[in-house]
Length: 345
Ligand code: SAH
Image (tube, rainbow, N blue to C red):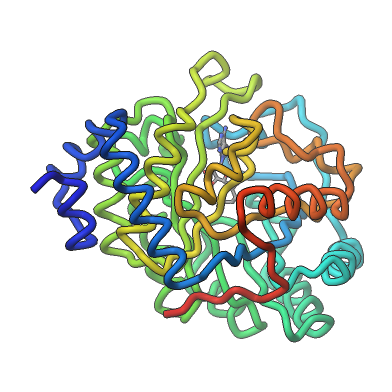
């Protein structure tokens, strides 16, 4: 049995088998086989529905210094902003009108947003939109902080693990950060009953078939409800400015692999994928993804939340983004739905 056939049968491989599978990522038959199975599974659980998440990038201040990230602390050439609670609520109101039933509050790790302030925002959003899910993506916090956010009404949490390989983690992050701390956060979030999202960049500097195999083994262990992956894209103000962007083809291949590994996973066709390829998000859906995350941030701040160069949709109103995405999804036989889109398990 080939590794691809075994993945389809068992939904799980050993590290060595994942390495062999990734080694076949350029083989057309292997790709087609996995894509077909991924689409079959996605169809079985979700039909042709695509869920939307309204992304609100509410602060680009960050105390961390991740080497790949455009809003890292040491980048002095980005003008910093943070939204007020009222501005966040305005984004949600507009999003609700456009049909969003999930809001994602994402930001750098900004100490201005103390637990008190964060809780106040969570409460306000949930009070205004009790039929919506609220997702946080604000980095590493203590168990106690996560507990308070959950109690205030947060439903989900996105925290990509970035790489599950210790040595590789060290190549992407300063020594103040660690894979162990990242993993602990993910397990804390699960224990608190959040729907949890992990994930990684494809083609980040230093990534190999082995580190990717570690990522897939880790996803199998963690069993997250959501997985975010997208190609690494260089940002000119980082040490990786001259590194090559991650491969779109490998990203699509891995989307199919992850759909088979975690059949009911909520899997976005990310903005990074749409940036790397003009048809990236459509192709992501056709590879097994079932979520898109249009931007609801105020137009004037869009450019300032540039994690990587040439990020798309920084000049479009939220309404335009929705129309555009709805058309894109329709063009490949899928439809955006006005639902929370919770995890099935
Ligand atoms: N501070 C939050 C949000 C991080 S930004 C947190 O720590 O979780 C969300 C994701 O963008 C990151 O997890 C990372 O995987 C991705 N990202 C950052 N820089 C990137 C780049 N240069 N190319 C592609 N993706 C990037």
